[in-house]
Every structure is written in structure tokens, then in C-alpha cells.
Image (cartoon, rainbow, N blue to C red; front, side):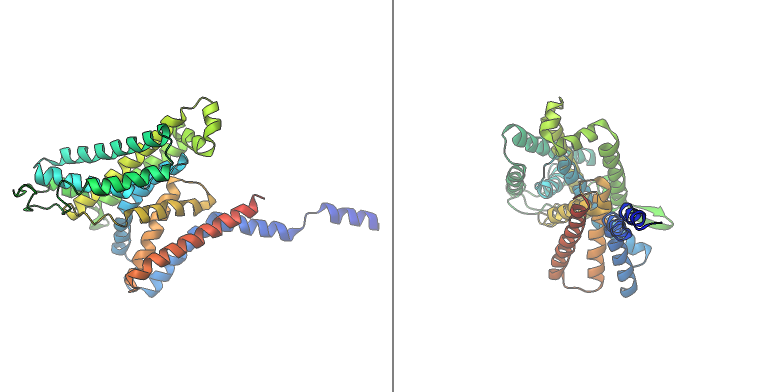
Length: 352
């Protein structure tokens, strides 16, 4: 072999080092966040007594069930390129409405559930109409709706929580009670290996997560929603009713938020006006973390469910380690920012 042939082979053979770096980067993008979640579970299991138990796992799932459901609704709006800041106030309004229907109006569980779902669908529809036809930016429209609902839900009771025996603004006493069937939505537990282990709210979260995942990934309607979110103008030129898809996304978000409010009311057994304070932030965190799962870099239902689980594991582990509550939001936010920067920075390098 002469020197010229040897030089040619060196030039045609790709170097191994960049290929290995690319492979390691792809693995980090795809599985880095899942590895971080697994590392957290191992760390808390090793250093926190009682964390690695079926009861603790179920408690984590129960604690994230409501925020997870709200996050799945936010994911639907993210898919079409929007964002819904009103989900927390919708959930709180649904909770207050359920309590008002049963305690003040003395109606049954079915009426309360239908009223809550109607509130979620109507608010979502109004959000969609304002954004699509009044051309109000999504953040501003849903932020305004959030403040509107916060004020509206306090008017009937003059800012007080709703419970049996409360004094109404006209001086009368509320005699109604929460229906046992309604309370079962938030308090019933199913048997799984251990009796009374799995809460009904966890089952609802799993069912809704599977439904919205299948809807977004495997139905024409869901794929068109992704097309609208990727390039609305191109989708419109292709004949897609872009405004209709966006409005439906906000209706889905509103209905999911109202389901979260129903479960919250059923768990508490009262209409607590301050109980939905952290729902918005935790739900948005779960939805945004979903971008980093499996390197998707896009809103997706599976990632959102993993994101909700991540938030639950982190908060439960910190609580069991007696970390002060006022530092938990900071740690949660720091982990969220690091995870997103890590994922998007690597993804950006790989696509150059």
C-alpha cells in the first residue's frame, strides 16, 4: 500500500470520537430526564425512611393526580401553540360550584358534576373565542379570565368557604350536605394487592392520561392539532379549520380543569376558596417538564404524566426529609430550569 492510498483511506474513514459523542448526546437527550427521575427515587429511598413503600408510592400518585389532570389539559393548549393560565381558577371555581350546588341548593352528585363540567366547557369556549376571534394573545386572555373567575367565585358567599351549616349572605343557614356518591370520587380506594390502596383520583388520572395520549398521537383530530401548533398558517392554507382546533383545545383544557376541581371538592368535602392556590404552578411545571421527557421537545401527554410524577416524587421526598416548605418551590423551579436547559441545549446542538 503506497502513501497515497493510505492517505485516501484515512480521509474516507469517519472519525470514531465525534460519532461516540453524538451517540452519548442522543442518549442523554432521550433518557437523561428519566435517569434523573430514577436517581431521585433511588436517593430518597436510600436516605428517607418509608419512601420505598407501596403506601408512599400511592400517596405520591394521589398528591399529583389533580395537578396531573390539569397539566394534561394545559398540554392540549400547548399542542396548538397556545397556553392556558386560567386552569387553576377554573378548578377552584368548579370546586366552589360543586359545594354550592350540594350545600346551598341541596342537589345531588349528578347535578353537581354536570354543573362543574359545564363551567369548564363554557370557560374554555369563551377563552377560545376571545383568542381566535377577538385576537387577544392567549396569555393575556387566559390571565384576564383567571382574575375574572377568582372574583366571580367569591361573590355568592361574600368570599367565604362553603360548608354545611354556614351562614349565607341573606342570613339563612345552608342545610345541604355533600352526597356520599360525590365524596366517593375523591375518597374511595380500590384494592390492589393491599386493601384500600389505590385512590379513585389516581385511576381517573391514568384513564385520562391514556385517553388524551391516544387522542393526540393516533387520531386525525389530534395530529391536526399538532399541525396547527407547528405552523398555523400552513395548516390554514391546507384547508384546516385552525380556529376550530384552537377553540377545542381550550374547551378540553377547561373540562380537564373542572374534573380536577370535582376531585378536589370530593377529597376535601367542602368548598375551600384557598385550596387551589398552587394548582396552576404545579400543573404548568408538569406540562413543561414533559418537553424534556424522551427528548420530545414538544408538548406530549406521556411526558406531562411523567412530569407530574417527577414533581410529586420531588416534593414528597423533600417533605419526608424535613426540608422547609419555603425552599421546596425554589428547588422545584431550579430542577425544572436545569432539566429544560439541559434538554434543549443538547437538542439544539444535535440539530445544527
